[in-house]
Length: 117
Image (cartoon, rainbow, N blue to C red; front, side):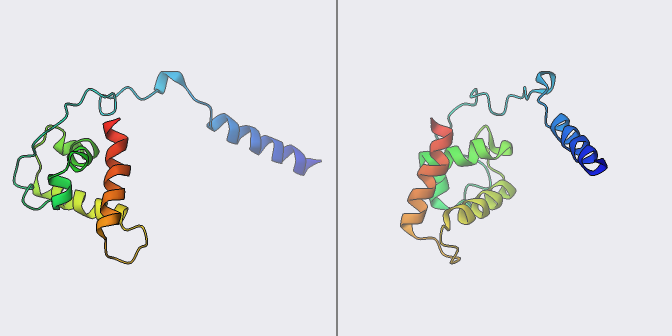
């Protein structure tokens, strides 16, 4: 009987912790869709960016929307390195430490498409 009581008490505590409080809803501007679409990237990191990130619409969306520091199209060297690493890991679907043209195209559409809808 005691075991059932403590199990019920634990379950109630767990469910109470999962309750959604409308007062603490996210209200930031990062994801509200008001970011401008950037046609050209600028800054010292552009030379470091992988071509598919710098030269495609989907790649520019990944960099500018996915990395807050590049929201206005200004890409630092740090952002470029982080974007390259993130995209290479994301695109390498078979985890062989190489990305093929097919993997790059699929990843650009999948990742960039989320932002361009």
